[in-house]
Length: 208
Image 1 (cartoon, rainbow, N blue to C red):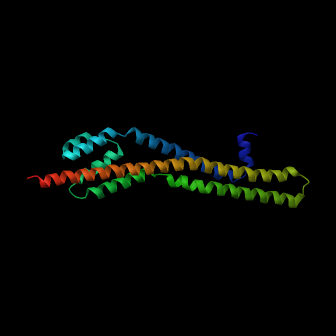
Image 2: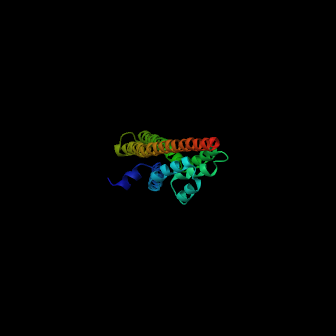
Image 3: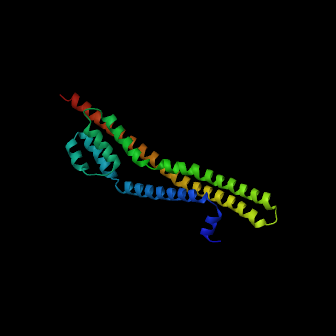
């Protein structure tokens, strides 16, 4: 049996399941490209240089080195340095929240599809069973093919809904783990910058 024949045998619920599968595939591809681009922009060497320069209080050198840099952690530290005389911590927190929002984009779509696809599959199952009982009520078992078509519809939609959910849950958990790791990295470097800045500030205050 060909794929489109299986699709047609699944009944009308297969159309919303098709929409779910397209949404899942689109989000997965978009998020993979996003994380690939984010990783490609990373500059870990420059992050360590920023902390070293912050320890000496060479803010102008940091500004020149980080100009135009697309690394999200470096942007975070740069925002903190710009607002060092006001509230470095809150400035970095606000920037981190914006970054996390970008990382979490479309994740609710995946989360919704993981829940909705199996429910649609069950809905298709119920419709298929109802169809089979209607045939049984009308013609008994005179034509078994009419009964089995309804059972086939029930099984196809269930399998499709579960398949979409399984395909979606793996990248969903992967992307969430990437977000969690990114948050930890931003917290680590933000805390390091605050510690270094406070040390440099204390040395300046105690200097005669």
